[in-house]
Each structure stands twice: as C-alpha cells, then as structure tokens.
Length: 85
Image 1: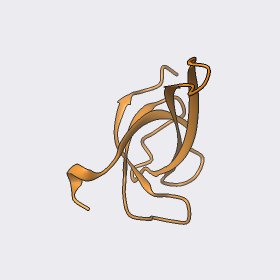
Image 2 (image 1 turned 180 degrees about the vertical axis):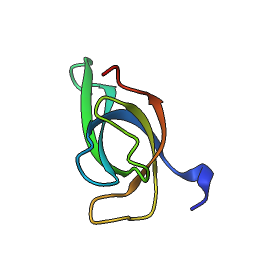
Image 3 (image 1 turned 45 degrees about the horizontal axis):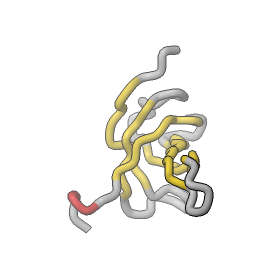
Image 4 (image 1 turned 135 degrees about the horizontal axis):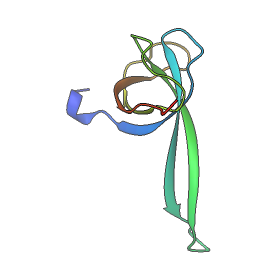
C-alpha cells in the first residue's frame, strides 16, 4: 500500500499510559438515516508513538500502518495542537 492511499484520522489523545502507545478518540458527525438529526459518534484507536511525545488532551493526526501489535494498526503522524495543561 503506497503512502498516498493510507487513511488519515484526526483525534484527541485520551490515554498515554502505555510505553510508545497512545489511545486516540476520533469523533465523526453524520446525519441519522431516519430522523435526519446530526449524530456524533466516536471510536478509539491505539496508535504507535515512537518518541512518547503525546500527552492526554493533545490533538493528533494518525495514519494507518501495518499491524504493530494485537490492537495497534495506526501511527501518530503529527501533533496538531498540544494540550493547554
């Protein structure tokens, strides 16, 4: 799979307790198929953070990669915004 075909998501780091791993919550908005209301849904992804640079509250961009462990299939591409803490 070439670099330009990889999926990219943006989300907020909710946990950075594991070594070289962060948990990122990605939210998406969509219209409900029956009620036509805007619905917000979120999903958590485990991402590889080689330098342990991410902290809880950071907004990061993650990109899909080969399987790195049982649950990790994403890598942290960049930190978009550091947390205010």
